[in-house]
Image (cartoon, rainbow, N blue to C red; front, side, top):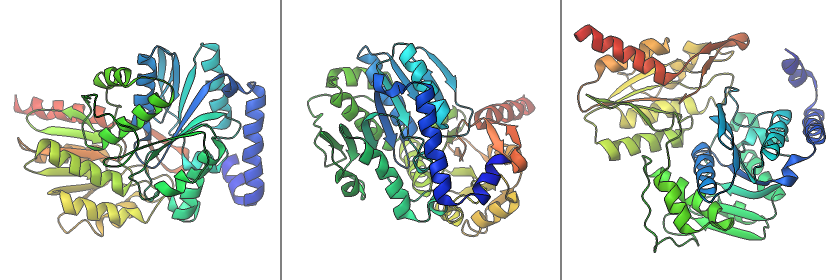
Length: 403
């Protein structure tokens, strides 16, 4: 209620100062802990969580004690816990406390997932970033930022404030914008372009999807920037584990069920393309929705259009409606999903329906939430949830009926 009041009645310029002062206060309270760490910030639209995970693994393989913070987990050395905040980048006090705890635990590095919303609210301020990493940029949070250029500018602020090392995906069409920021050293990577040569080192990556190759290249660049050899990077990547809820195969036989976060049109299309390439499914059965709360309404019919292009069965369902009417969101997605698309408000029932439709050789893809632990509803209500748990429960019940 207090947050809603502040947003509604305080002018934007005062609200910006309010966020900045909170960031400063948090840094003072915890003693500016980032000054005692090498802090690596990863920003972009897609791939941030996986890149944070891969960078952490490479630095640990090199013998360093590392802290990392992502939308999935908080990790300090050997200790880790699930991020249940439903925020990619926590508030200023939480971040500063996390960094202080990392210092107290003897960490040398901290790897942080940095969101545009977090930057807009100055959550990155008074953190001394040594490395800024750019994965890619596609439309996201357009309404809250007031346009794509504002969204890009928000991402750029991390690079403006980071003077030592920049790591940039040179294949992205927005790469030149990020390359224009000054830094002591710059590392670039891509499919064809890029100045990191790994031709003399063979890499085996156990992660699914072509996009994870780019994620691995991102992490390699960060490792090299910190003096880690290609051989150590190779050893780490060979042992890499997938991030929970990211291209995660939950059921393997007699058909496959895959869970993925995929909350942007580009991520959803890349997900479907990767599954077709990896598994050559007889049919692709999709279950997905879109976030409410006024977030990126433009992408809802785009989701429907993408699903119609790649999937043979489409079930549109509830995701995180917040204060919006859930069926209204579903109807907006369905506008471009084709006449055969099914609309099911209950997400569990949608998953159950998808499993009942699946035959050997099919792949069921359930996207939009990944491993998120809640469904966010009106008036701040949070319903405990995990797509993976629900899939296993419904699958076990279905199998039990046939025994």
